[in-house]
Image (cartoon, rainbow, N blue to C red; front, side, top):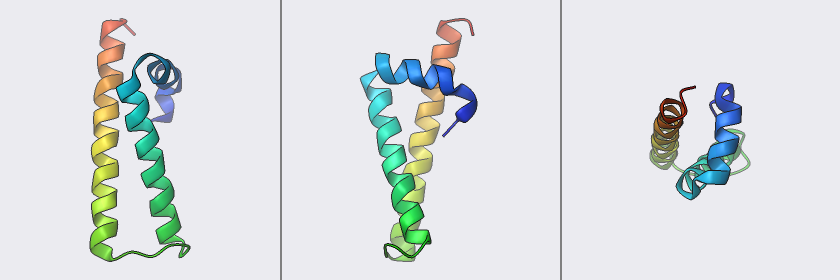
Length: 75
């Protein structure tokens, strides 16, 4: 997720518990989606869509926190 901000993500994960939680949940959902799409797990199309929407929402929230961090630290 957002690999171009790897350094900022690393700092935020250490400094911001909320960001760390968002990042962890995003990765959990990514793993779940991959398992479903590869056939290792099963769920309905509606549930899969819901999981993808939650993942996207978390990514948007993480991105907003990254931009806030960049602005605060003049990066």
